[in-house]
Image 1 (cartoon, helix red, strand yellow):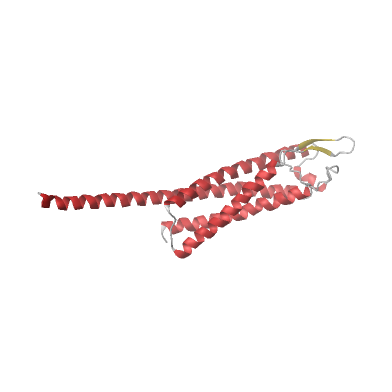
Image 2: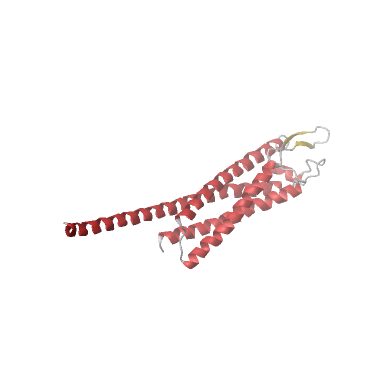
Length: 218
């Protein structure tokens, strides 16, 4: 198996993994928004009422969850398209062009940046929420077995699992996109090297032709 086929096979495998990880983000966050009546717990905090022990939540912007769903959705779509594209290349035995390889590098780097931002948002936003929870409970997951906010009618039974899964999916997805950027860069370097070899061979042929014609001219 040639170097190009190894790279393409690695890309296909990583794109499939990125697709599955995108689902690990989209599905839990979507269910979380349903359970929390449209509220996003990321960067939300609050105070505990002394009268009834309920949490008075200061809900943060839903844009944090919207961004998470958006970049994960793009990740899912791109991974799906690229998986089909590279699988077709493997089956047909064809190769990408230099331009398409350059496009893959740009897309992978952009998605790696988006994934890193999303992972940081989930991690820090979730920590902010847990800090508020742990003002009363010893651990953040303790809120899953208690009605902490009857006023908003949220269901907290699954938030710990949902956000934990999304956090895992976000960070692992970032690793995948970094890997995809590296694979695309290797392929781009390979094409650049091949182009340099072709140019060098063309120059050498032109020099040899010139050397052969020189005695005839004299």
